[in-house]
Amino acid sequence: MGIYLNGKRAYSLFQEDCAMTYYIDKTEMLDEIVRILEQKGNAVEETGAFRGKKMKYLCVTRPRRFGKTMAANMIGAFLGKGADSSEEFVYLKAAGYGWYQKHLNQHNVIHIMFNELPENRRSYEQYISRIKKGLIGDLRMAYPEIEIEKEDSVWDTLTKVFEYGNGDKFIFVLDEWDYIYHQKFVTEEEKDDFTKFLSNLLKDKAYVEMAYMTGILPIASACTAYTTQESIDSFVDPSAPN
Image (tube, rainbow, N blue to C red):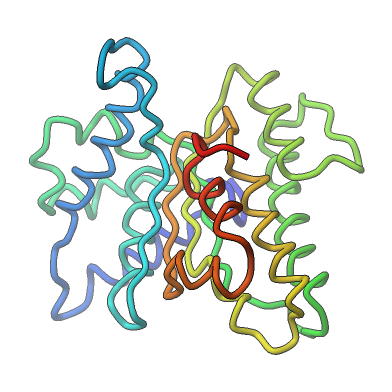
């Protein structure tokens, strides 16, 4: 259990959402998420059109106040091992699906809210270092038997966990992934560095079971303003040429 890895926060926030007077049950969308998880696994054994499909990257772009964070919390609360969320979900529509028990709280979920800043915000380096240190700290606690070097990057650490930790994989729920692009204290070069950080974290990594990202910035706008079309294509679609 940690701040980012298998934390309790997504469940706690979803619990509050469920208690709202006008809560609307949107757990049927979990059927689409589970299909991706299961189709991706089955694709390895398939032949023909389904052979080699990499259906594990989702990026949801909508205006503010359209429930993106609520949906992200729901996904983290349902899939993540951080807390037993059966008390909430058993009364919701998701409980009626055949996959309910198979996936309820059975996955390693890394849930990062990118709109959270350090207390004394001064630089992009402070912002990204907070995330890197927090995630590596969580992995150290969860996998004390794996030797993590001081100079290891986040993706080096996750790769070690995958290789030495029985092939453990992770679902990434990245809320407001594009938040940093709108901050005045971040330079254009640093915005490009952040795009590369996400690419290094997610692209062609065996430890990624699925990535679910929310934001308000369309990918097309991101590539125009902050990086090249080619680099965005390769980030969103790992099968695209480098």
